[in-house]
Length: 428
Ligand code: ADP
Ligand code: MG
Image 1: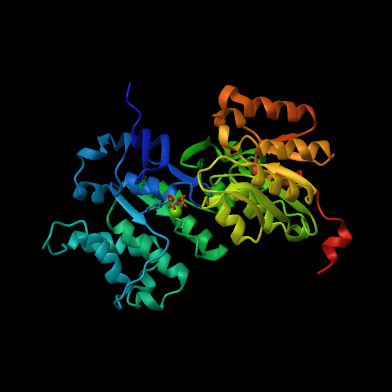
Image 2 (image 1 turned 90 degrees about the vertical axis):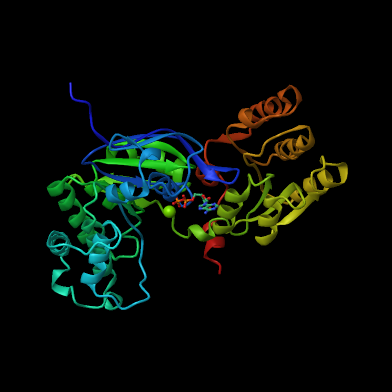
């Protein structure tokens, strides 16, 4: 039997910057001729993945093969002949014409000092026609519209006659018409010449329209991989993008329609409501940002001074109960936090790790429940409980029996917070 041919095969890929891991165990096989989109929030590691694929960034573990060749055995010239990258935007300091730019794509893969042959010019001409820029080939690149520029960059990539095109948010700057047009060109190329295309996109709807397969990245891992209808589900998108998103399928065209489920006046939902946040070590950053955006006022603590949660909370104007850096929580700090929490309508616990030093923070939750105030906690304390005898997990279990609510995601937690009454929301 003929072995399935893959443009890209990744096994157990890990990569990062310094000691910070960005890609964690990425496994992905992309057959030759595929047209596939990579989705995911900012910072998910999508661009890093492209850097790793093109050999610009080293692997810490795992293996990558391109068209059956181990990446580390391909020379940079060989890689350049296989892969073309289309970036988000390109600036040229010199007033090159469209045709000159596209020709540069071709000459880049020729051995040094080689003059382009008649064949090379033919390839360039074909690329100009394919991307519909032949009519403007003598115009200076800098004078072009966004759509024309992007088509020119795609022509430049095509002139390399690559077997794989990687597009990193290549249509993000374009308006919807031009995005659609660029996607049509890419689709045609993929179908006619069989070039494999992998594109990073923020346009979930457009990706679903044009790609048979979507791969969703989240925190350096693949959170979902499959046909659009399997990847673009309310549940998955909510857990990855931390905001409620609704996917509807048009009954006539079958098109997937993706919309953030915006509540009216979302930015004021929390107006007049105060939340106390129990966090630490950076675990509270995302939640505090969302609280501030939704108009909640909040206090936080006990936090250690100098910790990144402390800095974020200060920046967002929260009142804080602090302890000295790297010190266990003492009686004074916990008293301050209890006072702050008593002035709040609700207490929330983020996904902070627990050790012996910060166990007193659970007193704040206990106290709130005793006073009949809601307590919401992010799920998963078991996996970050380093307290002796797993005290933190056991205490939280008790708190759940007393009415604390466990929320699987930040979006869920925000959705369960009390919201301002309509009259308060309307007040400026
Ligand atoms: P995406 O393309 O999905 O938005 P990136 O791969 O660009 O994500 O970035 C993933 C993470 O790696 C981010 O937290 C980013 O800050 C970090 N990062 C990216 N490039 C570098 C770099 N050169 N040095 C250090 N950290 C980086
Ligand atoms: Mg990126």
